[in-house]
Image (tube, helix red, strand yellow):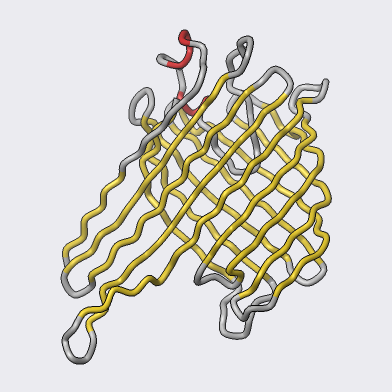
Length: 270
């Protein structure tokens, strides 16, 4: 069996201070690291606004006894204003297999297909690291326990730990969700939204991140967790290895509670 892995990434940024955009000392300070936490880089926000954008893409293609292709990618665009931090994220994942039938013919079968989009506006309060936020997200997962899952949440976030090499951010607030499970049933109701993220600078060129997001409702608890390690290749390019898990406590009888994904991607950011 022959296996080919390729990773590529594209990124675009809006207005940014030229003195820092091209030669930042550590790109990990500027790259958005989470779908749920918007953190300002260690540079002053200029008048107007600054955009910090990253894009990542990874793919695996196999031939021989097993033939198939899987692709994962994400675009994370963050806008820093004097009083607001705004973040917009789009991610996607699909897997397609070439199945050999009994008569020798080939059939292309899609075995995974998931897309998600989210937008978050966080108002910076008077104390450093404290935020009031509004978050909206939508996930379409053709083969998941929930084929559609939309949430809206408001709340308060703060930074519990702030050291030179480590930060810990948490947020909590009420929310509302609406979803459709794989059996066709629709669910909706109030939720309690909670999230936490630990970021640890392992070295000047490597960073570890652990993020957990929980939506607790009356009929289901939806949890998304990601563990990642990013290493800097050059001023704008990083290699990222990640393991993510999505769990729902209430799923149809023919579905599993947990979906996991392991990925290796290239990330381009500035």
